[in-house]
Length: 144
Image 1 (spheres, rainbow, N blue to C red):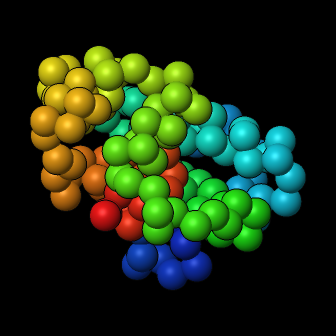
Image 2: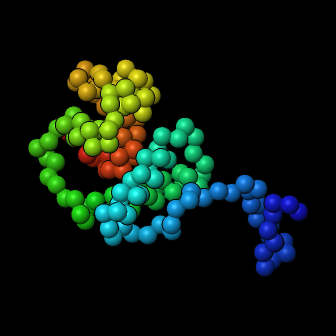
């Protein structure tokens, strides 16, 4: 039977997709260096902008996000209690070379980005989740 693998038990068959691709990257390991951190960030950026992810890509994005978050907890501890949500967002956008239009597209409406940055609109829960995934940070960072 094409597309199936026989296991130790003759009664158990596992379907394997005919086209199975894994992102071309080394095995995922805890982040130890700044270079590894930047590489993982680029992979997250690449996956985050794809319109539709495969299950493998979703899993990869999830694991990368967890590894990046853990590294940032260890390496980059900063007190954000006195920094507003808008300042945090602007900083992340600047660091990632993202403009208001790009932000709007990321959130689903091109005009939304500039409205949020001008303070005319607040971030919704869905926006916060999207931004947290995109920047591989905790959603709590966007809660004031």
